[in-house]
Image (cartoon, rainbow, N blue to C red; front, side, top):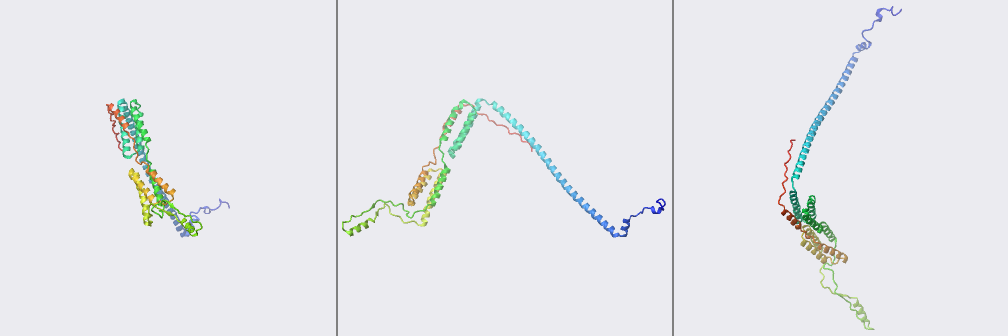
Length: 354
């Protein structure tokens, strides 16, 4: 029998598959598949929600960054406009200054230069009189001289000559090395504090003479010969001053602190520029050193005394040079000028609104 000869019922396609029939025959498989489908759908929904949250957050950040970028662009534009305006104002001021400079004649320029030089000269005198600052006064003199040299007017040569003399006088003025002297006094104070007061505080006993009176023994006299030998072992010394009693520990500390106080007072006199206090304190320190430290080794004692004498010989307040020559030369030139320098008052630039 061929396929064409088979009955029609045998060639029919079943309407329900075998899997559906198996599910209907077993309902718990349907429930399990439904739960799996719900779980898978919930997981997909959760992932979608998380992605949406992240995207929303990134979108907010982008919006914020875009807002800041727009603000920075506006500020940059405003700054560029302000710089452009300031540049225009500067150019305008330069042009106005150029026109004012061109409008000044030779006499007005000269009068203005003289006023500027007078200002620097007065500042130099104040530095010398109030602060004794030789370096500052010299710098001010040099500024005035450079200002006059830039003009190139031969009629200002007498004033420049006087300024050159005053500058040489300031250069030749010996400035006091206050820092160096202060450090020397400090080192000397530390050295004195480390010294130990000898046992004999009254000073080195000076020997007026030593009398050795050996007697010539009579020949053949044994007793007189022994007496002569005994007398040869005896030395008689005479002192100009009586020996003082030994100092106690408290007195030694007091002497040491008094000596340090003298050196500290000398430092104070140096800083305040008072030569009398400076020298008097050093003299007091030298006297204490000679009285209470006389039993020190001779080389050490003389070295300390020479250091004190060297410090006392320094003039801590030397005479300052006089700048009256420059002032007189300036007054002589100013007396010849009848024109005063014009006031170069420029209006303030207009402020722009932020």
